[in-house]
Image (cartoon, rainbow, N blue to C red):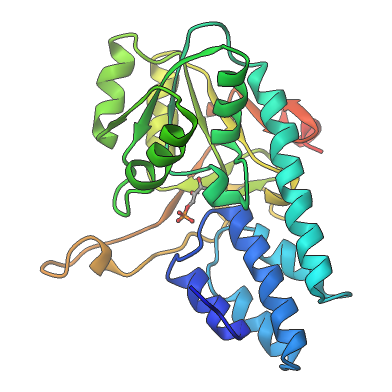
Length: 282
Ligand code: MRU
């Protein structure tokens, strides 16, 4: 898809042509560079881009990073730095895997969500490269199927053994002992470690706690929001109910918040952070 103005870039983010927290930030950065080249009103361009999706803090983070120098070069370096962060945190996260690990992931936190390599899927890649990963269960991720459409495709490209499951199958597969760890990305991590991610992540974390399975979050520092004390302050996007059904009334919250006590570790490019997150997060 070709975008020729900040408003078109904002539309691409809103309609999820580009999605995934770091990729949204990187795309918004290119949007600002485009607006500057077009000699658009930069304050208005920033406002339109900032309003495109509310939950991923990477979006305002990238817009702030572009304010002093809204050039293509700055956007490109922000993009490259984000991919480097993914590689570094994936290497740290791989330390949480042991030989023969069977992982479960939700949504898509791969190269398609980050501008390259991936956060949670990056961790799976790094673990596979080290010979530590046996298999990945991929939640299909209702309602838009990021798992079944994107994560499964990325794992297939890398030759990583995987199987797509209905979101509602996760609990029974955990009960049967088929899951050693759960790993997801994040859209915004509050100062206390409460983490917003794709709807269904919270349910997975509760299930993982019940089955005593570690639940890990892998995300770059651009996803940390120290200004928000806890999950109650994170804005949760409600999308068009028509994504679920046009026939009946529906609700469509796109994200949920996993409370920090359910998260065994948060991995950033700085390393593996353990509770209490107020102290351990960078
Ligand atoms: O609605 P989406 O597809 O943008 O939601 C994406 C997620 O929830 C991802 O898990 C998150 O952004 C992390 S991507 C590295």
